[in-house]
Image 1: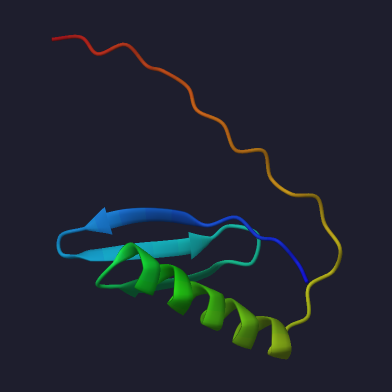
Image 2 (image 1 turned 90 degrees about the vertical axis):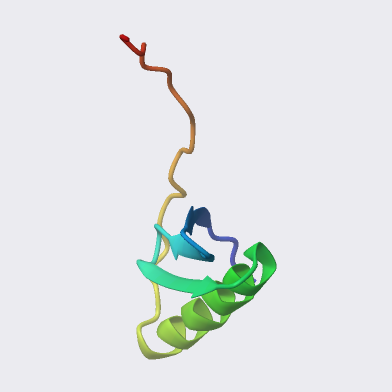
Length: 68
């Protein structure tokens, strides 16, 4: 079992989910549906293109001042 990162954002009426380690993306009407679809897309992708061992990315946040 491998663990991957998912980045999810909302675009209008749908949720878009992306996996930065693999480059797969999917969407759904709900957060849960987008995650399920991303998992399925990633599984199918990895069946065709097995991944070599790699380091996980570091996910963090940062702030930028807003000038009005």
